[in-house]
Length: 258
Image 1 (tube, rainbow, N blue to C red):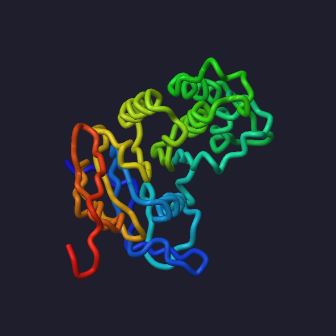
Image 2 (image 1 turned 45 degrees about the horizontal axis):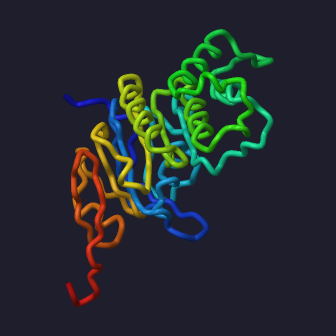
Image 3 (image 1 turned 90 degrees about the vertical axis):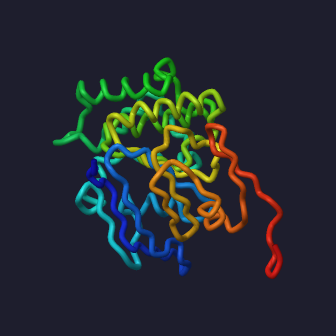
């Protein structure tokens, strides 16, 4: 059964600082997808997400989010940027930071949080397993705890689409497994798109995978192929599947040799 598209990119090209970052990218994410985009650092993954959010200018192409312009649908998106973009020295508690995820839903003046806002924030804290840290200053948390707080902030908005940029950085292995299970649960309520440079974080719960290195290589299933990885990473690979994809790099081919 055909599902409604929630994100549509058609022939998107993006230039930043005189450099081509995305080239002729076309992508369709459907409702209920758990979509992973992998690729090397500097391959344009963060720019792809910012394009979906309407934060960068297009050199060519078109973007639709939930049937409209990205700027008009931003309040329906939950965005988790890379960990290093946050300033955790700001004197706020974990609870206050997560509650700030509701700002886009406040109306009137002065804008004040209501009962629903607090309930949504509390639910997000519980979901990420940090409800007991709500009263602690964000600066006093470990890197993994801070990362979970960032994700909880995005969830507090009650988004229709959750967009995550390298969400498992600074999260230890047990927490990572719990986090991926949490995302799988959330897929019943929202569409999920996340990017990573680490193939090892992918799980059997992912419904679709694409590889990005300026150009996008898509595959309408959760299975990676050696051709996709080789095209994105620029070197030959063998894939060994044991529930989770792994990457093994054989000896690089030199021009004229194999």
